[in-house]
Length: 331
Image (cartoon, rainbow, N blue to C red; front, top):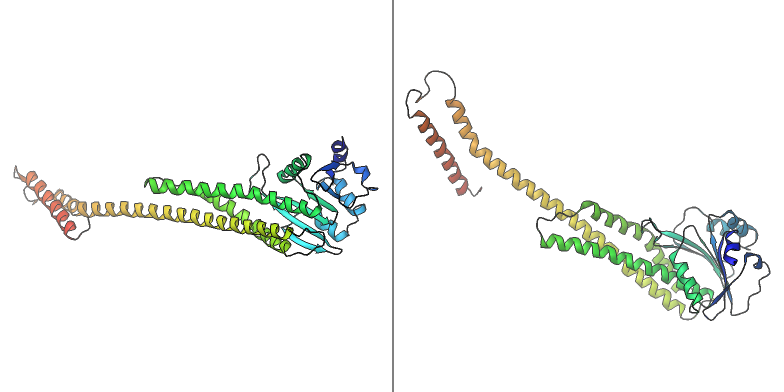
């Protein structure tokens, strides 16, 4: 019931984390007079496209106009902006797993976080937030605002891993086919798509890696002691994924270059054979054309063996040319 009421206000869900891994939903009307216990934290997840979201942020959220405008900005990139009072603005990107969407068309989540409140905004459904809800329902979700941020980053990074592995496997398959069959021609379209996907992922994952590194060095009082180690591990994971993406791009480029080189070699061999054949038949064509002149005085024109002699001369010329080409190692 709360979800249906909240949807009218653009609020995807409103949850109070109980500090034990669980959460209880609340209605939009409870936000104004909500009193949190010391161990509790509030998570508000909004639909950025809903007009009521902008109204609430500007009028009732208590955030500065600058922070609200950044959260509602149309286009943004992964970044971290510390705010006064141990608050932060965090912009992250995740793999787009929505039906009919390209995975490299990343979905964004904009977050304002402080000690006991996390405000997140999304434009399209985010699989990471759904999984987080499932964990909270099972009582094994985040216990605090800092853990919520860490789990969000972990789930977003986890989705990247499967996509990076899939791209690497596609390149592996193409390489195996090329090595096992000399006549196999890799599909340029699929290899170009791999390179395009890898480039699209790198565009957003590289700054996100820097964000995780920055968070691992942060000293906010509401961060847990072990958070730095976990953020550093996420940073290392993204470094590894970026290296794998770069390797996949290079391997795909090498396959394309190899195929272009093989195609060029095949074309050169074909043109070489045509050249040899032309060299062989050109003198014979000249001789037969010369003997075909319809004027008087052609040798052997009155002899019954003239045609046979001409054929033998042409054959001898062809054999002589072949022998010469073999000596010159042209064939």
